[in-house]
Length: 370
Image 1 (cartoon, rainbow, N blue to C red):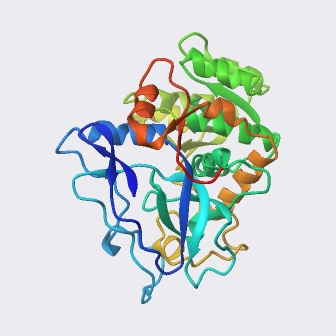
Image 2 (image 1 turned 180 degrees about the horizontal axis):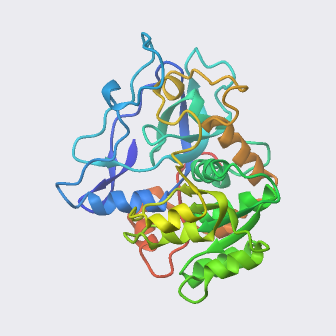
């Protein structure tokens, strides 16, 4: 089968063996997969440098965080990476081909979406642990469902703000995740304010219904946020920019209200100016992955769920929530992913994402079910 990798600074479509269906897994024929622009463009560039540290999912226990008591694990470990290439892709949709005997709620023929940088690659066939697979709601296209992981990351970031409906969230960075977060936040009843230096991103956010969108190179965003919040400042800022500068982080402190929360979702400088950090007694928290359970091998590889009363929004539950949002029409996928490219021509997709007129993301299409 064919699978897309990063190698020598380019996207390489290589022939590899089909994945073996293992304990607790679901074998899926891919229809579409969505590119995670920030992560995958970084991996492509890094693959041209022999000293680049591989960004593969950890495959050995010492690399995993200590979050549970020691138990004897019977589930398989994540598959090891392919020598000489870097895996690409972790957001896809398709049709179930087979399930392991331990999977009792899915069957061949079901339409599903799946996550996981260790398994849900840009590939014609993938075998994914059950806890990383969500059923596609009736009426939702597989093309739209392929955004599942990107949407789950955006959902998890907004949940990390700990905001309730009616509260104000600033989305600092209106790229792929920012535009998804804007739609999700509006659907949840948040007052959304967008901030970005790219006028194209600003116009897209306005087109999606964000009434206040600010360019910090043109206006005093702190004053504008204060004015929009009766002088209090934002309840939370989701910082989703990519820059070596620390100014966006410190500006997030300034836009925040007293005891506001800054959710770190991007890649940015971390030189904190103490007075700006302390002034509003803000809290700085990281947002990692798709929700509760990410990088927990017992959850992801062993399919042991968190009790809903102790872990309401796991990665899998965030998947289902996002797919329901898209199915209800509250997410405009045409703005997020207006273009699709055949998987065999994957490099064209990455070239487009490197161009000045780049869309938020591109969907790769396969010969699988529609």
